[in-house]
Image (cartoon, rainbow, N blue to C red; front, side, top):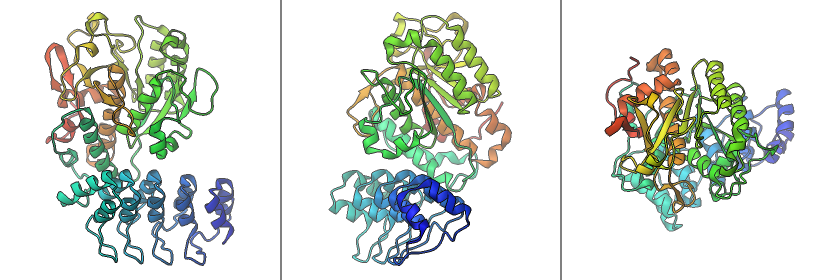
Length: 484
């Protein structure tokens, strides 16, 4: 093996950087026909894979037995890495000498999310290996029920690929079919939209990724969610900051892991966004002492992370000037291109809308059930200065917040807030990768006024100026996005 192969096999980023600066041959193969890119993909080393791809390493280079880097990523269960290779043009239907595709191996291993991503990216569900078995048959034999369901659904629909959108009226292809009978089904529809956007993004590699900051009690990487979805842990690399203490690793000391629940939910709803987690309080009891931390986190999120969206699932009975000032400063720093969401309250008519949700510069979020009916406990009265304004809500009741266990549920405006932030990210990303919308629309969509224009067009109106927002209303819309 060459030094390049060894660095890739170890995931040694520093050594790899030094070797690449010497302009070594990155396509050199070992005796089994493996390139450095294959070795890095096999080990799940995303940073090293990215370094090699940036040097135009061949994403479809094959080993002697026909394995590709994408096959290696699927074999190891590295979803984010597999997605990266697909976005760089890796062919999802390449077969090994035994006729196995990346979809076959994902099915064999039981990796539902990778199988779904590959299907959305154009993998042939009906492809057979040399034994005459499809990926569906392989998954069935291994008793991977979740993968079987994914493949049965796509085979039944005879859908093996989804084209990237070409016009503003195209989003209708992103809306899934089927009745929404509970909150889990609601989120599963979000999963389908996310998958379609991921597939569409392959044709738009230069699309600016949406960035979201979530301010709460932090994030516990020992949670079951991260065990089942290690790629989400990788998404937090360099995207964490502790404003309460000095922990360089993500933590959540809250007894109920409030911040962890919200962060994992956001990871799911905003699958294609960059998520930044700011720890601003130890727990709900310590919120009164967190005011300065919150103001500092808001400024940091805007100036350093350059986020597009901020999600805040907390509230105060009265205005906190330092937080108001920080929000105003963030809006100036980002030249209006930042959107703030905050939980309205969780005590219905027994309490008024809380701060900062009551601020004009912040979108106040209320909670609904899975069919869009506003839940009284999560629908407080607004302040007199906001009377007559549209007030928005989305799913906030019995929400499965952990992808690994849908029996774990929470309710409240606290849950609805990251969901509406994630819905906004879906819309912003779609508009950003749709070239026909034009620069002005792409800028406007990243502002509070711009996204409120979209909400006004797609939301289902209820009494007392309440409006229910769900993404399928946007993706089912036939007319072009209006900017007036």
